[in-house]
Image (cartoon, rainbow, N blue to C red; front, side, top):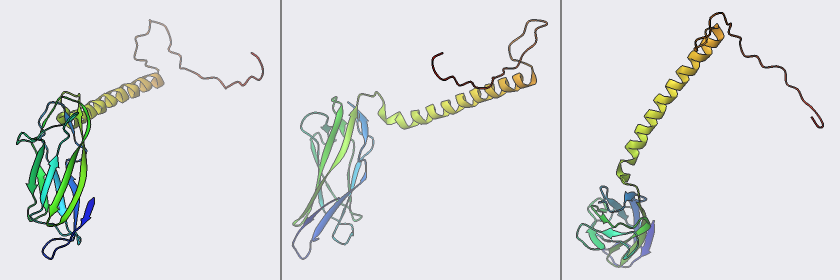
Amino acid sequence: MAAALAYGADNPALLAIRLTEGDGAIYAKGSRATRGLTVLITDETGRPVEGATVSFSLPADGPSGEFSSGGRTEIATTRADGRAAVWGMQWNRTSGPFEIRITAVKGQARAGTVSSQFLSDAVEVKDAAPAKARAGHKLLWISVIIAGAAVAGVAGVVSGKGTAASPAGSAVTPLQIGSPTISLGHP
């Protein structure tokens, strides 16, 4: 949260910026942002500030992109709920971390902060959560199958009916573990 002191009867004495959506997002390089970056601007009492001008700026080089307007800076005005948002950024093809600089102004009050973002080499980052969930379900089913096979194998050994076919006339001998031995010195 960032804050600044200001003077003026009709303007807030203090502005604060809180990132409410999109901070820490990871996108595939070269993709378009499907989620937005939303901030909440409040005054010194914590009330939302309507009509504040909010500037969002992308880096000039390295991992970065352009806003839907085609520039590296986008200006938005807060609504009655104190929120302002940008979305639809077109990311460049350089992977790595970067920061979006955010500045809010209302009268003489100013505040600033940054939002950390990351461009990844992954082909489809936006589907990472569903893929992870699918992988989790696959892992669960594989675990259930393995556990079932293990239980069946143990049950077969305990009952004397091994799962492998035994030659005619041979008896299945259960596995026995002897008592432990401790040796001191050289063997």
